Image 1 (cartoon, rainbow, N blue to C red):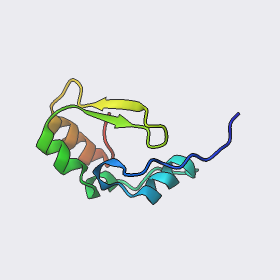
Image 2: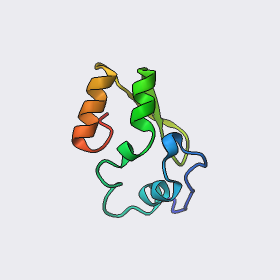
Image 3: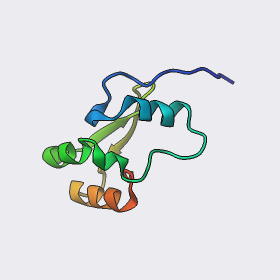
Length: 89
């Protein structure tokens, strides 16, 4: 088992707070970020403006994890995400 710390990447998308991302990805033992955190970033504005699928990446490795929205509109994806408090993949 590997047990090492790899900091999150610099210059995260949508103005995400690097300290928050590092805490969630590397030091999280209980919960993710608080509900609605993503709505405090530039994410909703940029997703609405582009209207295209978005690739979500692992903030440590940079590897793609999710693509959204798939099988629904951007509005449906954002409405569901806002209702849940986290991006709804």
